Length: 281
Image (tube, rainbow, N blue to C red; front, side):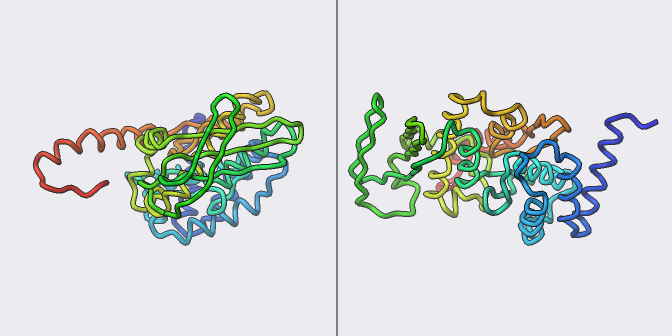
């Protein structure tokens, strides 16, 4: 009789076979339906299947991934479905070191804020502050004064980023990040090293996403009692390649993605000594 691990491996091979036959939607539908208990009650399997199937099948870079990475990609779709997020709209999948890194968008983080909210959201805003803008922030009262004066789509022009939410019960929360904070997040981001990354193609939008993520994390800390263990796992697991999601919602992340990023950064100074110029990775 086959043991549990052998059964899982056999099932995963069936999923990947469907992907290789360009039956991406069938593979996603089968995986999601087999784990339907992990999804929020208002999530439609058909929407998850259709959005992810269309997104993946139209991405040549994703369809070229090896079988192990394709399975990780399917698990990434399941992980995002656990918080009601749909491919393309709420998250992107970015190849990095031949691994499918799932990058949640601002829209996806807003969905999460909506899940853990203590009351109805009556106001929400987020923005970036460019060098040259008028900007003040009181960390005690969390009051912000921002007068935009500069328009830019360049990462180096960003000075701060902020996000604000107010709920019907009167509770307010503001999060502000300096450029130094943003640089630190980008430095450890696996997807930042990929040419397909939104850090490269749309850096300002990516920074807006990261500040909304920080707001979601703050609210998660304050109101974690409103979130069950399955959703907590999905919320805390972002911008990573997912090795596996078990039937209880436990997410195993592929740590090699982060290790590969660190190794790349450590090798850069040695290369600079031998070359007069070096393109940024």
